[in-house]
Amino acid sequence: ALLLERHGSSGLAAALADLRASCEANQGLVAPYFNEEVLKNDNKHLANRINLITMAMSTVSRDSTATQSCLVSSDAWDRACLDHPDLTEKGGTAVGGTAVGQAASDASELGEGPWLARIASQVAAANMRSTEVASEQGGPSGQPKRASLKMLSKTILDSYAADARLAVWDMACCVVASRQAAAYEAICAGSHLNPGNVTTIAHTFFDKAATEACSLASASLIEQTAPRADPGPEGRGKAAPLELVLGLCEWPSAFGAASVKEQAFQGACEGHGLTLTHGPAGSSVCLATSQTLGELICLTATDQRQAEGGASVGQAESEARWRQTVVHPLEIMKAAIEEVGASQGTLSTWDSSSDLPKEPPTRRPKADASGSLSEKDRVGLLQTTARKTLVALLPPLTPGGQGEEAGGDEAEAPEANRFGVVLVVVHCKEPKTACAARCVAAYFASLVRAAQDWAAGARPKEEDYSNFVLFSDTNLVSTALSESFRQDLESQGMSAAPFEASISTTRKQRSALHGQVYDKRKSHKVVSAPKDVVISKLGAMRQGFSLTPDLAEEGERCLPDSAWPSDHALVLANIAIT
Image 1 (cartoon, helix red, strand yellow):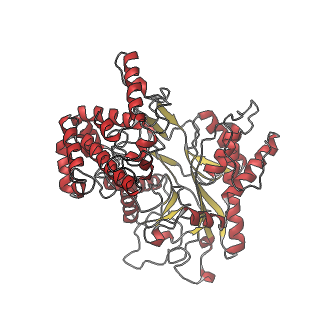
Image 2 (cartoon, rainbow, N blue to C red; image 1 turned 30 degrees about the vertical axis):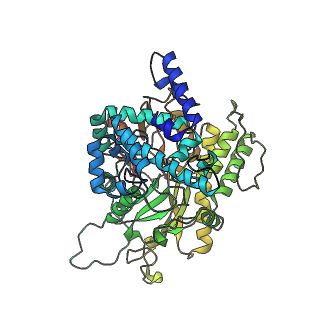
Image 3 (cartoon, helix red, strand yellow; image 1 turned 120 degrees about the vertical axis):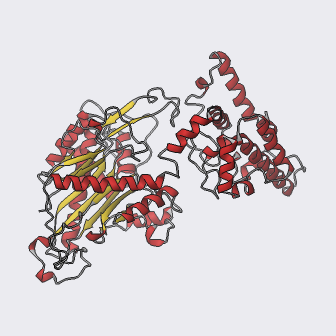
């Protein structure tokens, strides 16, 4: 009633009426109302909403790091206000004069917690601004035009005006959280998504990566053979530091200023002696390499945020840089699709000269029994897999141990110093058929060849880049497809760790309140799959591999959790550079 009074929206009235009718038809249950149609915009209109469950770790305002979870109870809200005084100065109950204050007071009397007071105050403030806009346009004072709502920016009404059913969904979630406030606060306090925990979690991730890498190296009795300068009497006999290369998918980055999570992971990465090299802006793929390895030579587009003082480049500039790269993943993927299609005689006709594929039609052709590539798979390979690709060269170590820039007389460099490494990171769109998986294998091999070809013409002739390491979240979901994919890799002269296609590297379980709450096939279903691989040339990974966490030994553990920040395990492999 409060929102109806302040908002005056016929859409909201209709949504509430539909909810009431659904409850009456379902023995008072609220959940059946929130079906796919009702929530079709839930993942599209995300700005300026308050939902204590699905947006618990989103910030209350643009000017604060306090999360929405603090709105569940008055005590939590008071603590947040003490830490962030701007919450009561900007957009809180002190803003907007009498109308806003009255709205907040009315909401507080309902006993549902500060979340309702905050929604009410923002709705009232929005209506006041709407009245001012209407007056400026010549409208009658005190009677805001409906159309003027479209002119309001950065207010809580933006998303709800677009789809009033989202207001009903958000209120329902907030009611559930506020009526179980103690349990809710406990869950939020321990969440891996809680900004207060991300620094600890980030260091835990890199600590475990380094510890497990050292353990794997020791177990395999690996001795580092990279030439180094004589450390002198004090350094002789001491073990050389382990040199680590991590291929990372879903790095917490986005356009604009770095998030709290990205800052935490960036700091932890640097604190562990690692340097980040980013893939194309928005791709969230990157390489983290030991600083002793020197600077990588990036052959694909990069996100220049770190190099330019913390502000990410714009989308247009990022696209321009994509076109100026040495290795062109999009063109390589097109060629791989053609190669696989031609070998099977099942290639669908399409314009390989176009930069990007068009969106597939509503009725997409499915792959037939022969395993031909469907239109949906083709679009996924070109628009997602090719875009989320990073290719770089790790130059040979110099006698000084700092990559090619460490100096030294190349003519006197030992023979072993010739070897550089091609590094590739790819985050794949799920290949749903054996044909799509074969395209991915061909794409991987072609990326490596393209980098090697460029190095052969552009790098000193004595450098050897026959060694390569490719890191990928393949998104393969079945053992059968994973086995087929490994066979395709072997035909390209490549092998993958884990060595067995049945070894799962991810295990997760959605609750009943995940992003597609209406999809009962996904709620409470444990999904385990062999998605992640480290790939090199045949015979190079004879030293073994490890998984962290090892899901085969972890019983029914699902990821992520407070001890591990990712829903995927870390795959580590010792690779012989020869």
